Figure 1 (spheres, rainbow over the protein chains, first blue to last red):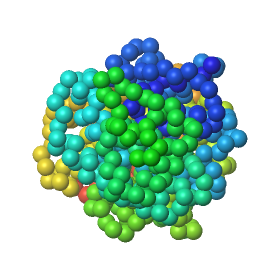
Figure 2 (cartoon, one colour; figure 1 turned 135 degrees about the vertical axis):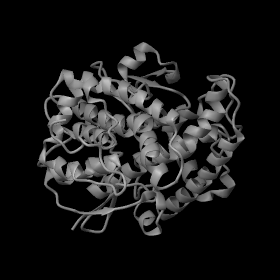
Figure 3 (cartoon, one colour; figure 1 turned 45 degrees about the vertical axis):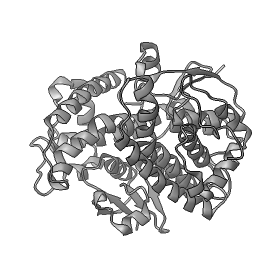
Figure 4 (tube, each protein chain N blue to C red; figure 1 turned 60 degrees about the vertical axis):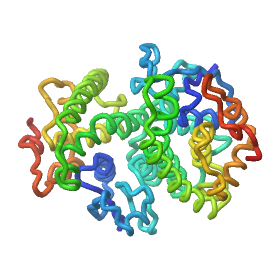
Length: 222
Length: 222
């Protein structure tokens, strides 16, 4: 059976958990602590990051974009990167935007302050860093409001990898209770739709010992 | 005609300049200063980053991976992402490694200290940051030595997007004179081969006013 090496609060890992659930692919999840730099795991992925998908042939497919493209090529019945070359470019642009800009400016700083410093590095969270990340988050949510106003789905006429990427990234912040949904009603409607999908159930059941999810995290009405 | 918005010292832009030259695609280069956050450019790419490829239909294709995949789909005569799904995953993994880990740990800090601080922010370069990035660079070049020892090309039996990505990233550091080639002879042999390709000529002719390239930068024997 395929094995997915992941971490519960890693947004990139969550993207692949959603992609696999949408495709109905069963796999054995294996939770990793990538910051421990365990030798066995580094042999699978020299970059030391999750997610890593071990195929049934024992090959390691590393990184969310790479795994998403790989599954698109071998399991093409449910296309998540669909359409013309331009439409596919737009889906990939949004995937990149979440995995790049959004991660750098919001995801990484908030994960560091809310989780890594408390449970790994035993440091003091910096209110300055949190404030800067929250400001970035509101700007980026305004952009998502605009995108979700244009169409039902982030990249246009049907659900795509872009929606799974966006929902995965927001779901980690929502676990911490960092999203002010009242200020972003368009994004809220879209996220509510994503959250109701069967593929989301497993994510909503995640619990980190010592760090409970925000009260509304698993509620479909929030 | 297609227009490529790029910056001369942006490794991701250089990847696309190499991809287009390898494919024999002619385009009009337009040099951008992405840190200026010019309104017209932000309309093309909300992320504000180069490279951006404007197609003949006036569509903006944003980001190196996205443009590389797009060109692969519309101009499939010279495949740069080739082979089985696993081989394609390995090519994409290496592209991601250069654009992600290598950029974060080496490319961004050295570009900041060597160029942005001097010409944009008017700050003082930090010898501490430079030292840390140089240490990371040696570790990553050891990994490239290992990869180039296994095969002629980074991802196996023929040239791929991974080689263009790697050579583009190293070329920026080599412009600054930051690579100690004597310590990395396997990578040097591979880079010499890349540097001799006609697609590389335009990169070797780049000159930044006030920041001349290292003496050996454009030499094919270095």
